[in-house]
Amino acid sequence: MASSVSTTRTPLEASGLAVRPGRWIDGWNAEDPAQWEAEGRTIAKRNLGWSVFAEFLGFVVWQLWSIVVVMLPAAGFALTSTQQFWLISVASLVGATLRFPYTFMVARFGGRNWTIISAALLLIPAILLGVVVQNPETPYPVLLLVAALGGLGGGNFASSMANITYFFPQREKGWALGLNAAGGNIGAAIAQLIVPIAVTLGAVGTLNIQLAGFIWVPFILVAIWGAWRFMDNLSTAKSDFAGAAAALKEPHLWIMALLYIGTFGSFIGFASVFPKLIADQFPEFSTFQVFGAGLSLAFLGALVGSLTRPYGGRLADRFGGARMTVVSFGGMIAATLAVVLTLPLASFWVFLACFLVLFSATGIANGATYRMIPSIFAARGAATAGEEHAVGAQRKGAAALGIISALGAYGGFFVPQVLNLSQQATGGYVPAFYGFIGAYAVLGILTAVVYLVPRRSLAGRIV
Image (tube, rainbow, N blue to C red; front, side, top):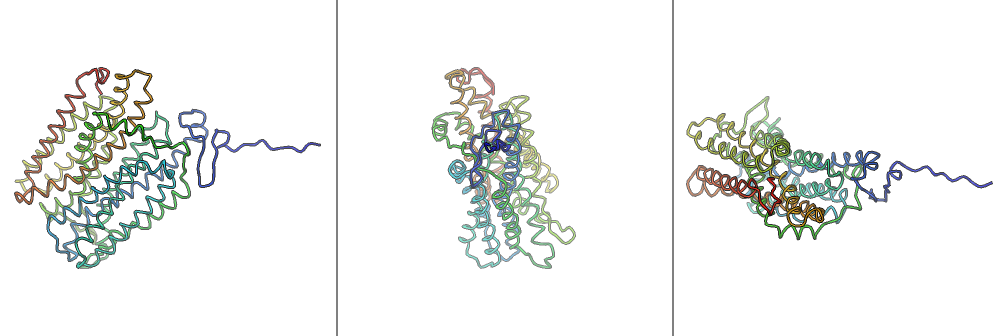
């Protein structure tokens, strides 16, 4: 009698997927409706959830020094204003630079594996911050080095976005990437909200400033464990160096990079420097005492900018990315001008309201500008080669998203440094604000001239 052989297949096998040791998945195709509905959606959402958490902590670590710097004088550190600006901005400089190599790490090591590694790297700046701020005699170069290491958190955005784009079908990428980006951006707000509470709660007449770094260690360990236990590597995730090289030759990449420096760069730059601006202009409002704990309202800026970003993308879908970007730059001009005109009133609440409008405008601009990128490259593909090369245009557009996000992050360095130069040259920030207004006007006009006028190079489309 012949022995019976079981033909039962696991759900993954039935979906055309195979799992290898190390949580590697072979045969992934998010565009396959049967695979997506059977197992793909569940796997993708699980990876998205842990990716958002890890990226959130990356933004937290990236922005820790933005709030710690304003507490250092009370902890006994004697720093000049210029030194404080450098501690705030150097993490953005490093983070923006790291976004280039981080973009290709997912394909090299696997999304799960690189999330484990990149999350573990966050332990270095978090722990070192907790160590160096305990001694007011810590040499300034050491403080600057530790602040620079916070840039490790800024690089996480690029690898996280690259990883998630492989998991979702084209029709759902916008939602997934928007959620991933918003979840990360909120980390800047949470850092500025939680740190003042943590370092002052229960501290009588002093600051437990070391907790600004140490409190995040358990969360980072959870992220490492979660990535190890629940995330997956996709063997189909490949680096597109040819697409990146082709994108770099595209003039529209550099135009969009300028626009993104103006939008995302303004968001992250003002988010990082907002606690210091409040401390400089309205020191009595820098920290409120609530039930024995310190509370800074600076977190509201990053929070508002993060929450409005998805609406920028949604409005761009309805009215067009270029139109919403021009409108957003107009809003940024109006809000920045309102800051300048109302400064003589010496009203903290007016100052806060004007900046919240500015942060709202940057958030909407972020979503709208980012939405323009795939539309532009699709139009370029249609104009230069028709449908025959639509895939090539899509590859260039995908590569451009990573490159532009990296270049845009340099705005997080430029904004604080422009404010620093203004203060050193004039003793105030008004010239810097007028400079930002001029830059936003130029960028708004550039957007309108290039993307609101039908052109053959864009297949006659208004993006």
